[in-house]
Length: 171
Image 1 (cartoon, rainbow, N blue to C red):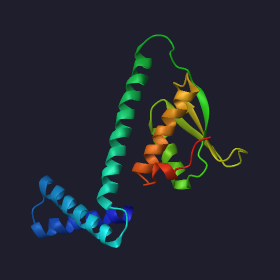
Image 2 (cartoon, one colour; image 1 turned 45 degrees about the vertical axis):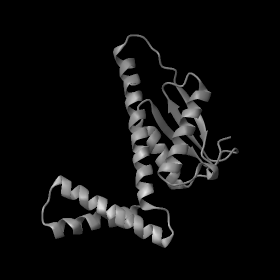
Image 3 (cartoon, rainbow, N blue to C red; image 1 turned 120 degrees about the vertical axis):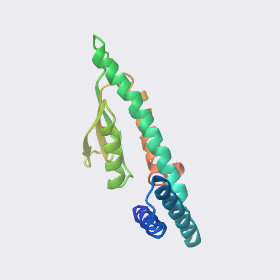
């Protein structure tokens, strides 16, 4: 995917050089034309469609921004209101069956979200590889796990292209 994205940027650069006018609309047009050419190229080769990968990546980015906004408001409310509504908890979350890059991306997505922090990956757990996550708002463990499951499922499908039926199930 990253190689195709770099090719898309190269094609957009070639478009800009040929058109000799640098404007936002022209850059956007170069990116769109490059994406369409690469979609055709990947389809001819029988690979996953590049354009569909871009659309799924954009869906994940929108989903993640929605989570960020929601949790930022939750943390801001905690800061400006008196009292203590937090219910912190450390959760052991199974990541068996994920590659190292998938675990790293999941851990970074979790850490980027305010109120959560990926603390450690344990390779020696008898139940399989797991990720330890500190959550500020995890009164209900099952609800926190289901939110993490949704994040993992969407990440694996929309970023890595792993269909839901092929994804490793949480224990």
